[in-house]
Amino acid sequence: MSDEGTSRRHMVRAAMKAPYLEREEEHDLAVRWREERDQQALHRLTAAHMRLVISIAARFRHFGLSMSDLIQEGHVGLLEAAARFEPDRQVRFSTYATWWIRASIQDYILRNWSIVRGGTSSTQKALFFNLRRLRARLSRGAEPMNEPIVYEEIANALGVSPADVALMDSRLSGPDLSLNAPVSEADGQSSDRQDFLAADGPLPDETVGAQIDSERWVLWLNQALTALNERELRIVRERRLSEDGATLESLGEKLGISKERVRQIESRALEKLKTALTNHQPERALSA
Image (cartoon, rainbow, N blue to C red):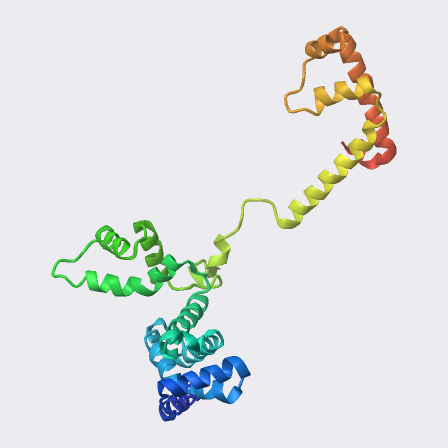
């Protein structure tokens, strides 16, 4: 027998041997733990409810995860319930703990069932844990049901959209696949799935390099622009640095000069910019 099977047997035997608690004794233990942090009281309270943990964990054994791990996660939920339980509300601890045990096990399954993280909203959880059961129940009739009808029925039962049902169904029916798994073999050479995931865009180092170069050019240009006077700067900004790019004629009207004069000032300003850029970064200016 495997170590996991032996460990599970020990947990089940210990749970079966733990005595049941009467209502008054359970209340007393809960009070001692809440008010005095009595570790012995906590141990007796949780040990008496390990049967409940094992029973709830068994309901989720068909998800392909270790039963021992499900029980351990259920025990975590049991401890959480003990930490939050308020004895004076006159509710049995087993009733209160059931929700926490189930929630802890379900969260564990959602985290480990697939490397693709499923949703964690209440509707997505309901879909994940009820889809197979509802689908099997709806498909038991003499006539096979097609997918849209099944999805519509399940959506109505759970209060979600048919699209959500279809998406969750595809997730549950498709197993995880390794990117290193071979998909074809041609000319004696096999191809992995990751070989078909190449992006058409630039590599990350190219993107970062282009961003750094762009930031440098902006810095150098701003420094070079300080060499222009106010009118030259206005003409260069409106003619060369704006998206629309003003015409010579429209700028001449704004400045009260001819469009030929605007062209002359622009030409002189560009020469001054080139000189300023050359002084700052001669190798960049010459290659520009």
